[in-house]
Image (tube, rainbow, N blue to C red; front, side, top):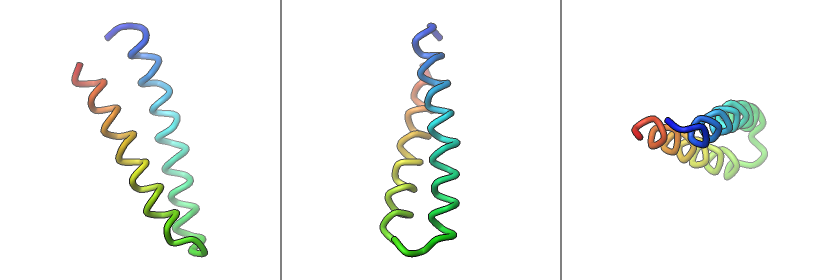
Amino acid sequence: MDKKSKKRLEVLRQKLEKQQKLLKDAKAQTDEPDEVTRLEIGLEAIKNEIAELKAK
């Protein structure tokens, strides 16, 4: 894995942590039901990108 990929992986892991926290908070606060769905989709996209980088 080259330096650029390692940096991208690090940034994606930070985004993943932030997204998970936002999702947890959104589930606790149910005033916007669409937000939970949007965050779950974003979370899956980040996980897929991490998997692609690890596969290289």
